[in-house]
Length: 165
Image (cartoon, rainbow, N blue to C red; front, side, top):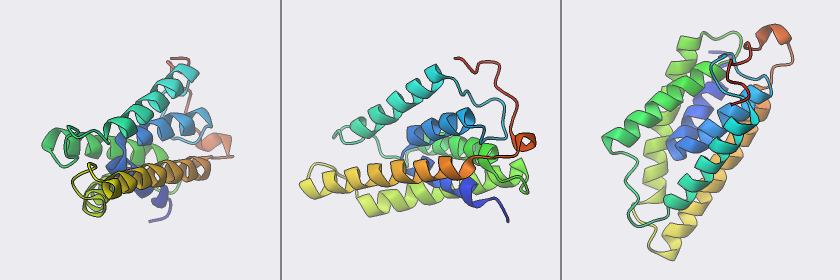
């Protein structure tokens, strides 16, 4: 069970804001905090995922934004949660255990986020709940990136061949 808290956490962020989790993964990779060499870590990747996270936060407030529980959205959150959990699992946890913790976190974040938020941002209260969810996702992602840093060089993943991408 040790080292799965961060994996669950990135999954939870994925359930709230999937692109925020992707941005957190690229930041963690840039700091040497992932165990997966396939996570891009270069400045272009970090800028693109940060822009995607901001766009998702803005788009989420639109009245036409789809429900996060529809099959394509939910499935994408599970995949991102699994990938993030596997990449950020602690050194004593297997990548498979990390992936499962990430999926569990993604399910929890998706369902709890939707239940807490409600279905509409058309009211002032709905907008406030959406902005609160944005802040929670971003704050949790930042905390997870900081915790994922691994000072031991042997625990760091090899640099991605597209690290500058």
